[in-house]
Length: 278
Image (cartoon, rainbow, N blue to C red):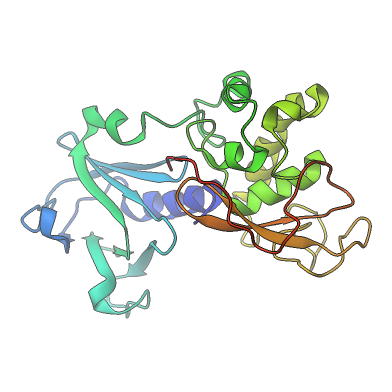
């Protein structure tokens, strides 16, 4: 699932291609909106909200989309061949006189009133890359369930919006805690740093084509995807196991030497699931 910085980049590309321009093509390829037509309306803006995308058009309408695991928005200059996937995977097409935005494999696609956007994204916590960012509220949300594993709490978009599985593993490493440590057991000084650290990572990467949490070229991530290679700090073999996020198990990486706290003893155990809203 794309992280908040990737969604922010997608929103910026869509905004640059569509905002301020009149739609000359509108093609919804989902049964629910088969008769919907936005042709003739001007796109006002495209705004990211956590991992959600809000494309607002004149007339008080918003196209709400979420990429989940496999979705993507591709932008093409008119006349260019589309290369985002086979035609049967296209869910929506929005075009103007210059460019066409094509939504592939979008699992969430809703056309709603702009006044009702809260129904789609109102459940989200403070957005790490948004104007509503509130570190105090984000920390309070995380600590509201002190027994919950830190990794699960970070992925719960109701606590703070924008962290995905990569940043979850990297943040836990930088905090020196395993993703299975109860969030309430995180030392107070490290807990206090968590919101600012998370924001720093996402802000540093929202303009980058390649995500990096280390600052080292060619070694972009401390632990994510590195098992069983050595930890970049202590050279202990990085480990991987599954951890639930409320919807599915996700591979979770950690260094057993640099990070303290409980961890699975076996490879990829099945963790108890909790409901998590994206």
